[in-house]
Length: 308
Ligand SMILES: NC(=O)c1ccc[n+]([C@@H]2O[C@H](COP(=O)([O-])OP(=O)(O)OC[C@H]3O[C@@H](n4cnc5c(N)ncnc54)[C@H](OP(=O)(O)O)[C@@H]3O)[C@@H](O)[C@H]2O)c1
Image 1 (cartoon, rainbow, N blue to C red):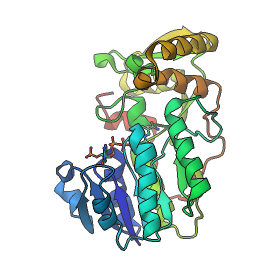
Image 2 (image 1 turned 135 degrees about the vertical axis):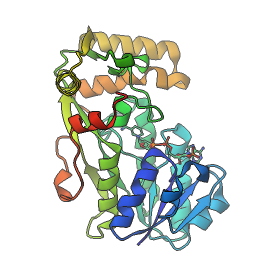
Image 3 (image 1 turned 30 degrees about the vertical axis):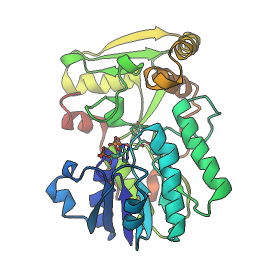
Image 4 (image 1 turned 60 degrees about the vertical axis):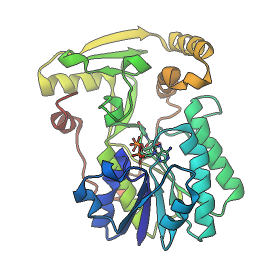
């Protein structure tokens, strides 16, 4: 099977290459900046195709030639989620390619209503448009938060208190800000496990398109702090921010003040609202589908990332 990774130079894109190869696939890459790839990763590719941007139609058409399946690993940018992916699908249709994994790896937005999390509105709109107008039936994968994003590792997204997230490594004096009781659970997955699960799924020709859910860990803020303290011998400062009702009011006021164009600055509140209400929680997981996906515990992840 020849699989094209669109956005192969990104965090997930690069992590997908080796697991796909291990499962016998040939891998082609398409992205803007080849120089972002280590030579050892480039060597694993059947070929690398350059693109100017997400609407570089000639480059996308060329990269799709002869491909059996496409994984879109574009970054979390509104125009990539909506226009970029819809354009990609139209070009896939031209060439009769139907096996497709769009860029998801999100908190589970399938039960969300419009406006609950404005960034996820773009995924809901894309999903709706494909369901109404395309022959392509995608594989959607949900994973909760990426561990790398939850702990705000550089280059993996910011979910610390500056964007109304939780964890602040705080130069070796860690703290966690939380709303509610601190016992509400977070679902978190490492990028590596998400990539391995994705590779297993797309290479498994017995699997039908649809929704799949994977999660590495489910812990509350208090549990994460306890694991951290045991692992590092350093106390984590827990800072309560208020009740669920306080959170709703703060989120509504900030959204009103900053508006949609600055959604990144207040969206962290809305992730927290729907995590607390459990509207984005995955109740049934597909972790058991592929027993050979290598699991990494939170303690081990912390050992791998001393910067947290
Ligand atoms: N659940 C979570 O916590 C969480 C967190 C983060 C991401 N995600 C999901 O995972 C997906 C992948 O995230 P990631 O961190 O791997 O993304 P990333 O590293 O930021 O970027 C992925 C790719 O997008 C490409 N790209 C960016 N702007 C582009 C443009 N204008 N035209 C063409 N290509 C462009 C990048 O190309 P260059 O290398 O050339 O810049 C890169 O190849 C996201 O879309 C999101 O759905 C989930």
